[in-house]
Image (cartoon, rainbow, N blue to C red; front, side, top):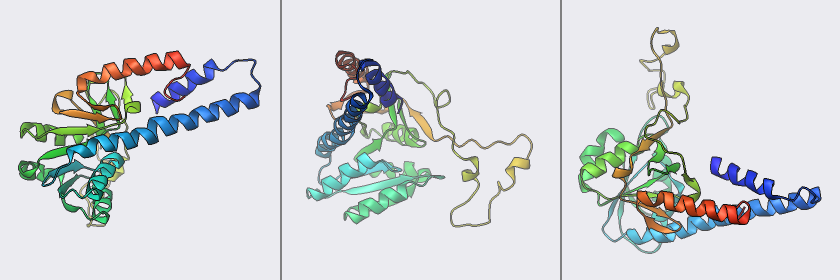
Length: 262
């Protein structure tokens, strides 16, 4: 979001101050439409076409929570006739993996559903790991749904390739080394309820317990050394190439007064 807002501000700044208001608005709306088409919709299509090449017959692919781009990669691979199995890893409190499971099963893909605490048991049977990302920092750190880093670390420890699917508009020039300095806090009460056990919770009334606080972080930071490859609309790149893409994007933006279709 920050990248898109910054590009929008650059485009507004480049508009001639003497231009009629209606004309300026039309130009800005057209730039926004073109940005969505090029940087998001078309980028997704190119990314999926690139990532699907890594799905082969007999694969056992592990993924975590829900990522629309990973779901699109796997469903397209199934549509192309590839035979493979997917292990969907999930965790509380979001349980987004259930959405992924539903979408994959609707496409006829054989799936297993496990929780994060069973990851070390099943990872030995995995051939590849596909993960989504909310953002990728210039030092290669991947910001993803909380639990992504644990999945990547476990896969790395078992020498399993970790592929992160992420469009380049999610690349950010900030350097981040931990999950605390920049993050998003979820509702702490989401940690209290237990699915399947309504009315049963050892944390009920936690607000009244002195020196007790619940921390529900939405994202975590995955170190670059756990990432085998980042799949983008430009192709497959190592985490060390993220600054190169950022530099090219900044040059394009400067040359076009907003750049990247905006």
